[in-house]
Structure formats: structure tokens, C-alpha cells
Length: 182
Ligand code: 5GP
Image 1: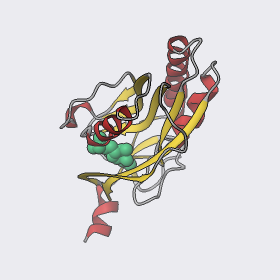
Image 2: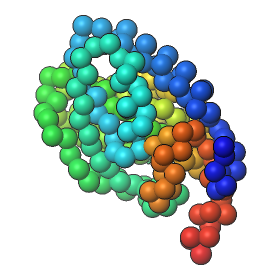
Image 3: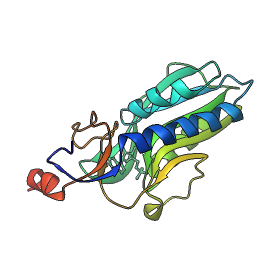
Image 4: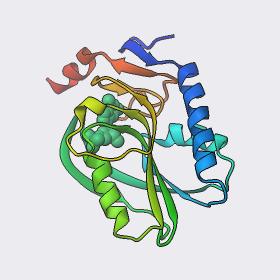
């Protein structure tokens, strides 16, 4: 059942489930015999992370980081570190897990920041890629879906902290955020 604030379901529960399983298989092959630290970018990636790790067949170590660049539906362009990792990543294989890449500013900032800590390797996995919106080029190693430039919510993604629990990814009706922005 579609929520009344959603104009269109972009990716169904089943489409996401199947794609996440395939991503998990690919990551499992690539990290066979390794013990990477998966860094989940809070809060949007937690639903994706929790499904993905159940398809990984290596010992999974998790850590979390929190960054901020968004106000409502617009990127401010200025990325801030809100909460840092607990563990050191020196000499470790690191895989960043992010919900969505849009301008690329957040992931470019994060990659630059983490590379100063001398990991052995660093790769990036995103569920959604708004490829056409890129302002900073950034190499994405694992992508779930390339999507159009529409503001989406669900499966972890929010608008003003709402809609994260929707089991699908949907496009939020612009009337919902315009109502609040007035
Ligand atoms: P970037 O820095 O690449 O422009 O944006 C990355 C961050 O912007 C994501 O981590 C996410 O928090 C937010 N973001 C970008 N597009 C969307 C979207 O369509 N929906 C939601 N909920 N967040 C988005």
C-alpha cells in the first residue's frame, strides 16, 4: 500500500530485496579471505546495511559515522562531521555503505577524511545513485540502482526524519515539503 504522501513507487520491496542480495554476493566474492570494516553513514544507510550484511559471508565488522549536509530537500554544500568512528581504520580494508549519492560532495568529503587515516583499501557501496546530479566526480565501486533526480524517501531515507520505515523507495510529493517550506 502506497503512503498518501508518496506520488510514485520508484523501487518496490521485491526489487530492492533482489538487488541487495546480488550486491551482497558480489561483495562477498570480492572480500573473500578479508575482514573489512563496513562504515555505515548514519542514518540513511542503516536499513540497507542491515539487509546487506545478511548476504555477506565474511566476518563483518561494523562502525558508524554521521555527517550532515542536508537541510530539508536541499544539499547545503557544506559537509560537517557530526559523529566519528569508534575504531581506528589504519591498515584496514574499509567499505563505506551509503544510502544515496547525489552531488557527490558528502562522499568526496568522507573519502578524503578517511584516506588521511591510512586504510589499506577504501571502497564505496551505495544503494542509489542520482548520476545526473554529480558536482564532484567520485568513484562508486558498488551501486544498487541509478535513479532520476527526484527527492525520494523510504528504506532508510528520510524527509525531516520521516518515512524511513517505508519498505519501498518512493518519490515524495513536492506538495509535502512545499507545505513546510512556506
Ligand atoms: P550528496 O552530498 O551526494 O549531494 O548527497 C548525499 C546525501 O544527501 C545523502 O547521504 C542523503 O542524506 C542526501 N540525499 C540526497 N538525495 C536524497 C534524496 O533523494 N532523498 C533523501 N532522503 N536524501 C537525499
